[in-house]
Image (tube, rainbow, N blue to C red; front, side, top):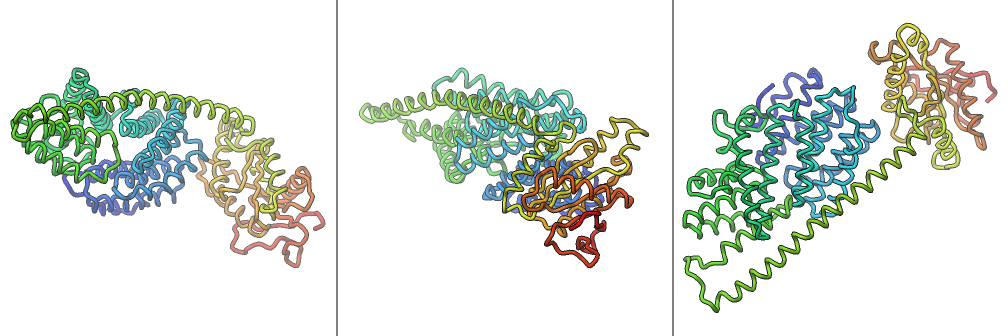
Length: 594
């Protein structure tokens, strides 16, 4: 795999050999590299990354593995959130990610989708709505299980850390530092035993960014000692980040110290001890690529070093230039206030260093007093933000808990599909809806399932049922209902589907199950009985007819559909349902009068 060093991305490399020949792990690894690169690229390169990630997403969707699809949806959305002017393009991807993760029960990635939604809302100035999305994300993470045996411990920990980190980004953007510190500490805890150099570097850099923003915020309310402590802690973390950065996925120049490549790290040392020694390095980094709010940190650090070196005019010029270039950035409101405050601080004295006369000093003193009062009020509001976050987080947790109890009453615990009770309710609702007519009803039974239990084990049989349930759900439309009827039987409701269209859809499902790898399905196939709901027909009656049609399919050898149309549907001359000859499983007539 190509390592991303220097300034070039060369996104063409991942296309040779063909994506279809690469493993799932390669797709994920490539996506991680590209996300690391897009954060420090110019717009032209960012657009190339977006295009490449879309290609990786398309390949993941072709393969259909749920976790892989969710992770590539995340990568495609993140690349748009980072690329200026593309936040609106991320919204449909996040909507799809939410629907996909909810459908497949991927709690960590679902929480991550909410966190990324919050990130997009901050970028569009909807800060209160962003706080609600983070509350939803944290509520999901609070109730998430400790691990998922199918993913493995390391992959689970990485997904948990990623979701927490995306929550942290929003809290840090909003300046809710106490809550942000709690969240990033959880992210660190999640991967402390399995983190690689890139994860370690990312966490260290994020904590440094938070500490610097926090320190600047403390200064604004006159708590200079606490601010200095934050700056010194950030500087010590910068030193610790040097080694893992050299092995991370971030674009970098080999052999060059991290503080000479990353503006955030250079700024941390300068803010801890402003001095002329930092000026040259900060000047070089101030014209480089980086996050907008990272550029503000570099500008503030450079201005303080210039001021300490007796060059207040140059310091003011640096801040004014940064204010102009970052005027359109909304990614971190609190950081923009830090920049304005720094300008006010430097502008309080005369440019030539002369002490203002008493009559000149009075309005400046009054203005400073007014600013201090406003800052104190803003500082007190942060407690309100934290309280709001905690209240909404608890509300979301309780709502989810109530929803889970309700869902458990209507969900089959083995497959996650609707159970018999939920099926009855849905069938009644669809039967009463004119929009759902014609309503096709199919009863599905597994051929050869008893042999799986006899030859292997009931645990293997349970795995087969889960695989078949997932395959059926993915093969059909999102508004079709797949329910577990009991044992190895499933019922499928296809609203708005005449028998001919339902037959073709179910034929695709039969083919999908028959094509499953042997170690997953142990060779089971499907026998399907298909009927169309008759006017005024009760639920038990339509299910009884579907059951009879299913046994007809069994008698004919299984792995096929027997369709019994309702009066008025199109039939061929033998009274059988009319089927597209391209369908993989033929329909057969049943013994009932139609």
